Length: 56
Image (cartoon, rainbow, N blue to C red; front, side):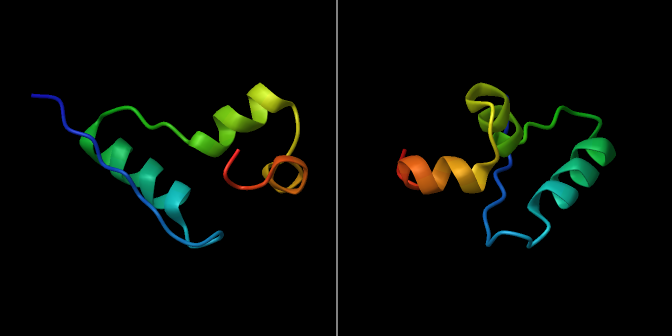
């Protein structure tokens, strides 16, 4: 059975840092949604939110 861990929290809370550490410790993959969005949109998260809103 495949299991996932999702970390949520305020900006700057350390979600990505903790996520990477947990993934390394468990020898599994890590996905940072912010990184995926930045690559897809070609701009920083703050700019995406300013232009499209957080719900976008």
